[in-house]
Length: 289
Image (cartoon, rainbow, N blue to C red; front, side, top):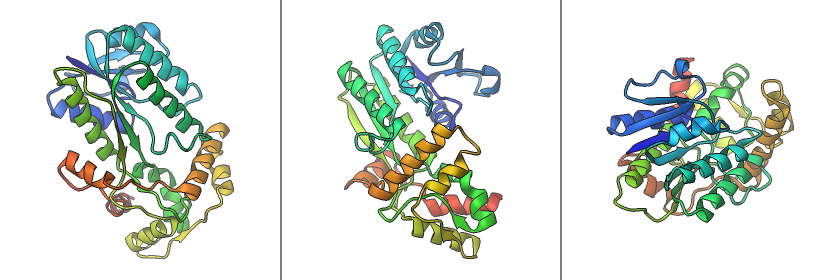
């Protein structure tokens, strides 16, 4: 049967599609602009978005398993509610949902609260679901690389609790593994939650130290106060989104994103290899600059 991937043109979704194709899965994607999708010829493309009911119904036709990824947006929860209702209407019971680490704790951060609401929907509606809860994406650092390279400051307010940043390639590979496990099972499997983390938990000072080593010059940590960070982000994104990032940063400072015992070992077992490290990513980013 077919696996439907939403959010397929994003950083995670595109890797998920590639992983599924490499494993000989039948894949369909729902995208707004097919001409820009540039997928392999054997990927079935449906044009539309998560608020387009007709497109959703076409996309879910003869689908057994769903990868549900809702991008951060003002109507993110509405998208999730509609997608899950149309999925159930189409008889889809198997879902891998991309949530977020600490979705049940950081309830004042809008997209954390939204994703926890979607988790509760999956349970209440009786889906057979794997809920993936990734920590902060290592790949987000691309957005701040100019500050690091040009001003020798690591600007993200991470704090001293530490965050186990995760590579999107690891997220996608675990997602593909779970999609195929559920899709190929003879019957519905029990639901479960998997924390997606990196191999080490790093503080703001430790992240700055890594960049100092990689760039071979001093890089300082910008500190825990997120107000300046919010102001800078507001110049490149909507102010509500910049404020949301500030709230997320405040959660990093107050609570961190620290793996539970066994999280790293579980992921290593699923992948059959070590997790990608922050230092390797930083080195690759520096080499490409």
